[in-house]
Image (tube, rainbow, N blue to C red; front, side, top):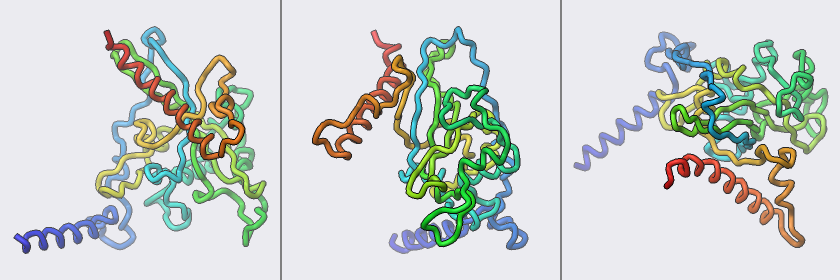
Length: 288
Protein backbone atom coordinates (compact mmCIF):
# COMPACT_ATOMS: atom_id res chain seq x y z
CA UNK A 1 0.00 0.00 0.00
CA UNK A 2 2.83 2.37 0.91
CA UNK A 3 4.54 1.62 -2.39
CA UNK A 4 1.37 2.50 -4.30
CA UNK A 5 1.03 5.79 -2.45
CA UNK A 6 4.71 6.60 -3.09
CA UNK A 7 4.41 5.78 -6.81
CA UNK A 8 1.21 7.84 -7.06
CA UNK A 9 2.98 10.78 -5.43
CA UNK A 10 5.92 10.55 -7.83
CA UNK A 11 3.60 10.36 -10.85
CA UNK A 12 1.63 13.39 -9.66
CA UNK A 13 4.83 15.41 -9.16
CA UNK A 14 6.06 14.48 -12.63
CA UNK A 15 2.67 15.32 -14.14
CA UNK A 16 2.58 18.72 -12.48
CA UNK A 17 6.07 19.45 -13.82
CA UNK A 18 5.20 18.31 -17.35
CA UNK A 19 2.06 20.42 -17.53
CA UNK A 20 3.56 23.50 -15.86
CA UNK A 21 3.90 25.05 -19.33
CA UNK A 22 1.27 24.97 -22.04
CA UNK A 23 1.93 23.04 -25.26
CA UNK A 24 4.97 21.38 -23.67
CA UNK A 25 4.03 17.95 -25.00
CA UNK A 26 3.26 19.06 -28.55
CA UNK A 27 6.20 21.44 -29.06
CA UNK A 28 8.39 20.48 -32.02
CA UNK A 29 11.06 22.97 -30.94
CA UNK A 30 11.67 25.07 -27.78
CA UNK A 31 10.19 28.23 -29.35
CA UNK A 32 6.75 26.54 -29.35
CA UNK A 33 6.77 25.91 -25.60
CA UNK A 34 4.20 28.15 -23.93
CA UNK A 35 2.30 28.76 -27.16
CA UNK A 36 -0.96 26.98 -26.46
CA UNK A 37 -2.22 24.87 -29.33
CA UNK A 38 -5.73 25.90 -28.33
CA UNK A 39 -5.09 29.65 -28.19
CA UNK A 40 -7.29 30.23 -31.21
CA UNK A 41 -10.00 28.17 -29.50
CA UNK A 42 -10.12 29.98 -26.18
CA UNK A 43 -13.67 31.09 -26.77
CA UNK A 44 -14.84 29.73 -30.14
CA UNK A 45 -18.46 30.29 -29.15
CA UNK A 46 -18.01 33.91 -28.07
CA UNK A 47 -21.35 35.68 -28.05
CA UNK A 48 -22.18 39.34 -27.73
CA UNK A 49 -24.50 40.41 -24.94
CA UNK A 50 -28.02 39.33 -25.95
CA UNK A 51 -30.64 41.95 -26.69
CA UNK A 52 -32.88 42.59 -23.70
CA UNK A 53 -36.40 43.91 -24.13
CA UNK A 54 -37.00 46.70 -21.60
CA UNK A 55 -40.45 45.33 -20.77
CA UNK A 56 -38.84 42.08 -19.60
CA UNK A 57 -36.82 43.87 -16.90
CA UNK A 58 -38.85 43.76 -13.71
CA UNK A 59 -36.20 45.40 -11.49
CA UNK A 60 -32.66 46.73 -11.87
CA UNK A 61 -29.92 48.48 -9.91
CA UNK A 62 -26.65 49.96 -11.13
CA UNK A 63 -23.67 49.28 -8.86
CA UNK A 64 -20.05 50.39 -8.84
CA UNK A 65 -17.44 48.02 -7.41
CA UNK A 66 -13.73 48.03 -6.71
CA UNK A 67 -11.58 44.97 -7.50
CA UNK A 68 -8.55 45.08 -5.19
CA UNK A 69 -5.59 43.38 -6.87
CA UNK A 70 -3.96 42.78 -3.48
CA UNK A 71 -6.55 40.06 -2.82
CA UNK A 72 -5.36 36.58 -3.74
CA UNK A 73 -8.53 35.72 -5.67
CA UNK A 74 -7.82 38.66 -7.99
CA UNK A 75 -4.19 37.74 -8.74
CA UNK A 76 -5.09 36.38 -12.23
CA UNK A 77 -5.99 39.96 -13.21
CA UNK A 78 -2.71 41.35 -11.84
CA UNK A 79 0.05 38.92 -12.81
CA UNK A 80 2.50 38.79 -14.47
CA UNK A 81 3.62 42.23 -13.33
CA UNK A 82 6.86 42.07 -15.33
CA UNK A 83 5.64 43.17 -18.75
CA UNK A 84 8.94 42.30 -20.39
CA UNK A 85 9.14 38.74 -19.09
CA UNK A 86 6.40 37.30 -21.29
CA UNK A 87 5.36 38.13 -24.83
CA UNK A 88 2.18 36.42 -26.02
CA UNK A 89 2.11 33.44 -23.66
CA UNK A 90 0.91 35.32 -20.58
CA UNK A 91 -0.38 38.84 -20.13
CA UNK A 92 -1.94 40.79 -17.31
CA UNK A 93 -5.26 42.52 -17.88
CA UNK A 94 -3.52 45.90 -17.90
CA UNK A 95 -1.00 44.82 -20.53
CA UNK A 96 -3.82 43.69 -22.82
CA UNK A 97 -5.68 46.98 -22.35
CA UNK A 98 -2.58 49.11 -22.82
CA UNK A 99 -1.42 47.27 -25.97
CA UNK A 100 -4.82 47.60 -27.61
CA UNK A 101 -5.10 51.28 -26.71
CA UNK A 102 -1.71 51.97 -28.25
CA UNK A 103 -2.49 50.06 -31.43
CA UNK A 104 -5.85 51.81 -31.77
CA UNK A 105 -8.09 48.78 -31.19
CA UNK A 106 -9.63 50.19 -28.01
CA UNK A 107 -11.23 53.58 -28.63
CA UNK A 108 -14.41 53.62 -26.48
CA UNK A 109 -12.59 55.52 -23.73
CA UNK A 110 -14.14 58.18 -21.49
CA UNK A 111 -12.99 60.69 -18.91
CA UNK A 112 -12.47 59.27 -15.41
CA UNK A 113 -15.13 61.63 -14.01
CA UNK A 114 -17.72 60.37 -16.48
CA UNK A 115 -19.12 57.01 -15.39
CA UNK A 116 -22.24 57.61 -17.49
CA UNK A 117 -20.29 57.43 -20.76
CA UNK A 118 -21.54 60.72 -22.14
CA UNK A 119 -20.38 61.54 -25.64
CA UNK A 120 -18.98 64.95 -24.69
CA UNK A 121 -16.60 63.24 -22.23
CA UNK A 122 -15.19 60.81 -24.75
CA UNK A 123 -11.37 60.86 -24.96
CA UNK A 124 -10.21 60.88 -28.57
CA UNK A 125 -6.70 60.25 -29.84
CA UNK A 126 -4.14 57.73 -28.62
CA UNK A 127 -1.80 60.41 -27.25
CA UNK A 128 -4.55 61.91 -25.07
CA UNK A 129 -5.53 58.50 -23.68
CA UNK A 130 -1.92 57.53 -23.03
CA UNK A 131 -1.34 60.79 -21.19
CA UNK A 132 -3.56 59.55 -18.34
CA UNK A 133 -1.13 56.76 -17.49
CA UNK A 134 2.09 58.38 -18.69
CA UNK A 135 4.75 60.66 -17.31
CA UNK A 136 7.98 62.16 -18.58
CA UNK A 137 9.60 61.78 -15.17
CA UNK A 138 8.67 60.16 -11.86
CA UNK A 139 10.38 61.59 -8.75
CA UNK A 140 12.03 58.90 -6.66
CA UNK A 141 12.60 56.49 -9.53
CA UNK A 142 16.15 55.46 -10.39
CA UNK A 143 15.26 56.09 -14.02
CA UNK A 144 12.38 57.94 -15.70
CA UNK A 145 9.30 55.80 -16.30
CA UNK A 146 7.34 56.71 -19.41
CA UNK A 147 4.13 54.71 -19.01
CA UNK A 148 2.42 52.73 -16.24
CA UNK A 149 3.35 49.07 -16.10
CA UNK A 150 1.33 46.16 -14.76
CA UNK A 151 3.13 46.55 -11.42
CA UNK A 152 1.66 50.07 -11.12
CA UNK A 153 -1.95 48.89 -11.31
CA UNK A 154 -3.53 48.37 -7.89
CA UNK A 155 -7.13 47.66 -8.84
CA UNK A 156 -10.05 48.09 -11.21
CA UNK A 157 -13.32 49.91 -10.78
CA UNK A 158 -16.25 48.39 -12.59
CA UNK A 159 -19.77 49.54 -13.37
CA UNK A 160 -22.52 47.01 -13.89
CA UNK A 161 -26.24 46.46 -13.54
CA UNK A 162 -28.10 43.75 -11.67
CA UNK A 163 -31.52 43.09 -13.15
CA UNK A 164 -34.35 40.61 -12.78
CA UNK A 165 -35.35 39.11 -16.11
CA UNK A 166 -38.99 38.14 -15.72
CA UNK A 167 -38.92 36.32 -19.06
CA UNK A 168 -36.52 33.76 -17.59
CA UNK A 169 -37.40 34.41 -13.92
CA UNK A 170 -33.75 34.96 -13.14
CA UNK A 171 -31.47 37.56 -11.59
CA UNK A 172 -28.68 38.50 -13.99
CA UNK A 173 -25.66 40.79 -14.08
CA UNK A 174 -24.22 42.75 -16.97
CA UNK A 175 -20.81 44.45 -16.87
CA UNK A 176 -20.91 47.87 -18.55
CA UNK A 177 -17.66 49.67 -17.79
CA UNK A 178 -14.18 49.12 -16.39
CA UNK A 179 -11.63 51.62 -15.08
CA UNK A 180 -7.95 50.78 -14.46
CA UNK A 181 -6.84 52.24 -11.13
CA UNK A 182 -3.18 52.67 -10.28
CA UNK A 183 -0.17 54.81 -9.62
CA UNK A 184 -0.20 58.43 -10.72
CA UNK A 185 3.12 58.85 -12.52
CA UNK A 186 2.81 62.63 -12.49
CA UNK A 187 2.35 63.03 -8.73
CA UNK A 188 4.59 60.87 -6.57
CA UNK A 189 2.82 58.80 -3.93
CA UNK A 190 -0.69 59.21 -5.36
CA UNK A 191 -3.06 56.80 -7.05
CA UNK A 192 -5.85 57.52 -9.49
CA UNK A 193 -8.32 56.06 -11.92
CA UNK A 194 -7.02 56.46 -15.47
CA UNK A 195 -10.19 56.40 -17.59
CA UNK A 196 -13.43 54.49 -18.13
CA UNK A 197 -13.73 51.95 -20.94
CA UNK A 198 -17.10 50.84 -22.32
CA UNK A 199 -16.77 47.14 -21.52
CA UNK A 200 -18.94 45.63 -24.32
CA UNK A 201 -16.52 47.20 -26.84
CA UNK A 202 -13.54 45.20 -25.52
CA UNK A 203 -15.20 41.84 -24.79
CA UNK A 204 -14.02 40.27 -28.03
CA UNK A 205 -10.45 41.44 -27.37
CA UNK A 206 -10.39 39.97 -23.86
CA UNK A 207 -11.96 36.74 -25.11
CA UNK A 208 -8.78 36.06 -27.11
CA UNK A 209 -6.52 36.05 -24.04
CA UNK A 210 -6.26 33.33 -21.42
CA UNK A 211 -6.24 33.75 -17.66
CA UNK A 212 -3.58 31.72 -15.86
CA UNK A 213 -5.03 28.86 -13.80
CA UNK A 214 -2.66 27.71 -11.05
CA UNK A 215 -4.93 24.74 -10.31
CA UNK A 216 -4.84 23.29 -13.81
CA UNK A 217 -2.78 24.70 -16.68
CA UNK A 218 -4.84 22.70 -19.14
CA UNK A 219 -8.13 24.26 -18.12
CA UNK A 220 -8.07 28.01 -18.63
CA UNK A 221 -10.72 30.61 -19.35
CA UNK A 222 -10.55 33.98 -21.07
CA UNK A 223 -10.41 37.34 -19.30
CA UNK A 224 -13.89 38.03 -20.63
CA UNK A 225 -15.24 34.83 -19.08
CA UNK A 226 -13.64 35.72 -15.75
CA UNK A 227 -15.14 39.21 -15.64
CA UNK A 228 -18.57 38.49 -17.13
CA UNK A 229 -19.07 35.49 -14.82
CA UNK A 230 -17.83 37.51 -11.81
CA UNK A 231 -15.00 35.17 -10.86
CA UNK A 232 -13.32 37.83 -8.73
CA UNK A 233 -13.59 39.46 -5.33
CA UNK A 234 -14.92 43.01 -5.05
CA UNK A 235 -16.79 45.43 -2.83
CA UNK A 236 -19.45 47.98 -3.71
CA UNK A 237 -18.33 51.58 -3.25
CA UNK A 238 -21.32 53.27 -4.91
CA UNK A 239 -24.75 52.55 -6.34
CA UNK A 240 -27.36 54.62 -8.14
CA UNK A 241 -29.40 56.60 -5.63
CA UNK A 242 -31.50 59.72 -5.24
CA UNK A 243 -28.58 61.61 -3.66
CA UNK A 244 -26.72 62.07 -6.93
CA UNK A 245 -25.19 58.59 -6.82
CA UNK A 246 -23.12 59.51 -3.79
CA UNK A 247 -20.49 57.03 -2.62
CA UNK A 248 -20.83 54.96 0.53
CA UNK A 249 -17.92 56.84 2.10
CA UNK A 250 -19.90 60.08 1.66
CA UNK A 251 -22.62 59.04 4.10
CA UNK A 252 -20.76 56.53 6.26
CA UNK A 253 -18.52 59.23 7.66
CA UNK A 254 -15.81 58.90 10.25
CA UNK A 255 -17.02 59.37 13.81
CA UNK A 256 -15.12 61.42 16.43
CA UNK A 257 -12.40 59.28 17.97
CA UNK A 258 -12.89 56.48 15.45
CA UNK A 259 -9.81 54.91 13.91
CA UNK A 260 -9.37 54.56 10.15
CA UNK A 261 -9.66 50.78 10.50
CA UNK A 262 -12.98 51.04 12.32
CA UNK A 263 -14.31 53.49 9.76
CA UNK A 264 -13.28 51.29 6.85
CA UNK A 265 -14.94 48.31 8.52
CA UNK A 266 -18.26 50.19 8.71
CA UNK A 267 -17.93 51.12 5.02
CA UNK A 268 -17.33 47.47 4.10
CA UNK A 269 -20.28 46.34 6.22
CA UNK A 270 -22.53 48.81 4.38
CA UNK A 271 -21.18 47.48 1.08
CA UNK A 272 -22.03 43.93 2.15
CA UNK A 273 -25.51 45.04 3.24
CA UNK A 274 -26.21 46.47 -0.22
CA UNK A 275 -24.85 43.35 -1.91
CA UNK A 276 -27.05 41.11 0.25
CA UNK A 277 -30.07 43.30 -0.47
CA UNK A 278 -29.51 42.88 -4.22
CA UNK A 279 -28.97 39.13 -4.07
CA UNK A 280 -31.92 38.62 -1.73
CA UNK A 281 -34.29 40.24 -4.23
CA UNK A 282 -34.44 37.05 -6.31
CA UNK A 283 -35.17 34.95 -3.21
CA UNK A 284 -37.89 37.39 -2.15
CA UNK A 285 -39.57 36.93 -5.54
CA UNK A 286 -40.30 33.33 -4.57
CA UNK A 287 -41.36 34.10 -1.00
CA UNK A 288 -44.91 33.73 0.20
